[in-house]
Image 1 (cartoon, rainbow, N blue to C red):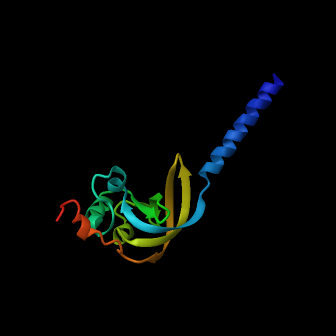
Image 2 (cartoon, rainbow, N blue to C red):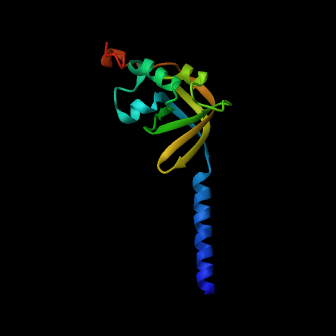
Length: 142
């Protein structure tokens, strides 16, 4: 009986430590393009660069979370930008939509997702991914 109680307690402690480790953020710098997460994930239309800029603005203003498509090919879902308490229609998010940025923040990994709380924008190179000539202006085409 005592062994069973001890084993149960040890298993519970191991699970608690694993959960605590999974929830602990990492300080990171991420470089990449700010993207419209909905169109990128669903592939409903071409989701990058100047071709998608207008649609990305509409989605961000409407509350669709933005992401950063990192140079490492990973998508980081931005949950917070700076001191703002909400990312919905955040003026900073709208100002940098489709821009190539380098940001500093806290990365949370949960169930295969990468969530980013951005503390500051280190660099903002503006829109550098000129895709409108190849893909037209999304969602309109031309």
